[in-house]
Image (tube, rainbow, N blue to C red; front, side, top):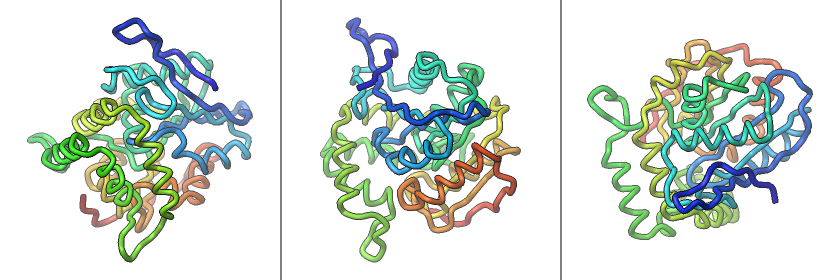
Length: 297
């Protein structure tokens, strides 16, 4: 197994991040790709992309966020400044240059914070997929955000019965209901297993971080080519509070709306997502598509 050291915890123990490193870069700008997973999963959510992207002349690195997957589970360090520093440790230790950062959901926050906190070092392009940017929480100066009660309920349910919450959340994540079955029960079971091995503390603290962190100033500092992808039926991170506003904050970004797609489009729209990422990485997406319509949390 491959690990990168990302500092030490309060007791002096090494914090180790598990990663996979596949394929070989062509050397072109952006042809090394770093995939950053969403909450509450691990890098294994990128299973299909990890099988396909390296076949197109790309070097692809995917790692487990601290507290999740096979990485260390320290007591603290789940704020976005620390998580962005962990991403920097990955880029520095592997000496990755001219990379494309791809952040899914919570991972989009790491992309945004890294770009501002570390000046976009080593990065050629960025992609935000179903991302939590620019600011999810509804406040006086962010009236288009999501009510705090929604996040309070998530915290309450995690504390009450984390296993039950994760199983219910998984269905919402992919838009599974009595009529629509976009993923199999086997896949849901696999996701539950991936999520349940995470630290209970990390699961709680990261939910707080992605709900309450304001990335508006971070996005304003992004100067590299950017891609924004979001499903207009995302019930987990609603497009009006996230994808649309991220695209507006990055006026030169390419914005692609997946009609009818849920939050977990890396699975439900896996072939399209892979192709759109390849087009952006290798050629650049040339057409900015129109913004989607209704989505309710």
